[in-house]
Length: 79
Image 1 (cartoon, rainbow, N blue to C red):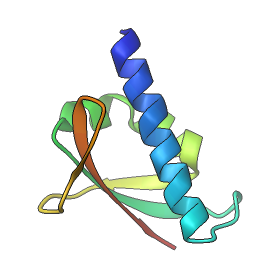
Image 2 (cartoon, rainbow, N blue to C red; image 1 turned 45 degrees about the vertical axis):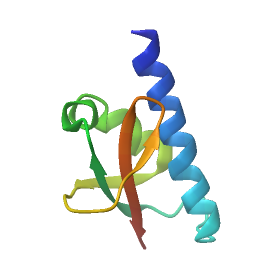
Image 3 (spheres, rainbow, N blue to C red; image 1 turned 30 degrees about the vertical axis):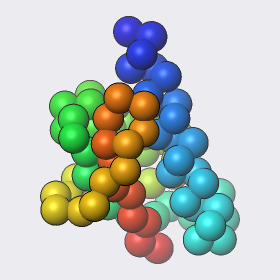
Image 4 (cartoon, one colour; image 1 turned 180 degrees about the horizontal axis):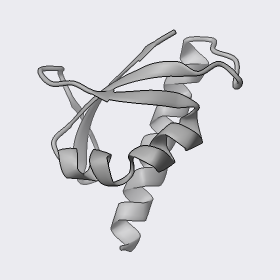
């Protein structure tokens, strides 16, 4: 679905912004701690998220989330 693809692109962009803020080099693989109001979305697109952002994803709960299009996410990177 087009909306899901758009949501995935926006999430990847947000993760890349966080990588840039953390001054990570593109080749550096980091752990992505992520929470979402739609865990099925994360499960469905885990491979695309990890490959598109050079991260290893770990789904967590209890984080303060922000809205990104139709879903809410909390993102934290650990080098």
